[in-house]
Amino acid sequence: MKISDRYLKIVEWSEEDGVYVGTCPGLFYGGVHGMDQAKVYAELCEVVEENIALYLEDKRPLPPATNREYSGKFMLRVEPELHKVIAIKALKAGQSLNSFCQTVLKSAVF
Image 1 (cartoon, rainbow, N blue to C red):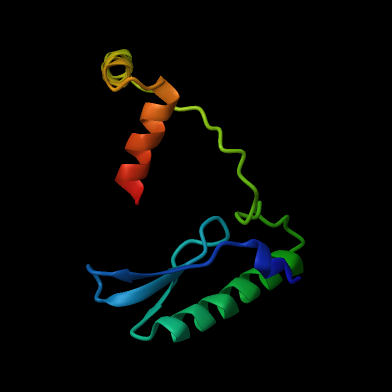
Image 2: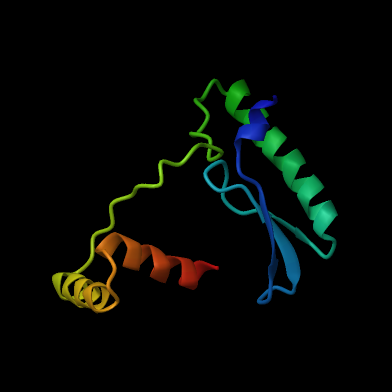
């Protein structure tokens, strides 16, 4: 496995720019763009390799890799009033606060 395999590479369509945009969050700012999704990904992989080489050449520590395991737990802080509203809605739905929030998050993301 190459070092670059540990970093998340994202290629997505940008309505605003009218092109595919490739980024590697955490490793460098900015990205690459173009009309062909596969070419953008290939170029992104090259840029990731180049950035890693620069880090190593300068003897700087690499940023933490984004390709990792997730525990399924995270802390979310909300305003007390929102907490109250969500807790009441969960009760009305007959769900725990955790289950209710998971359902709401899934519907918002997927």
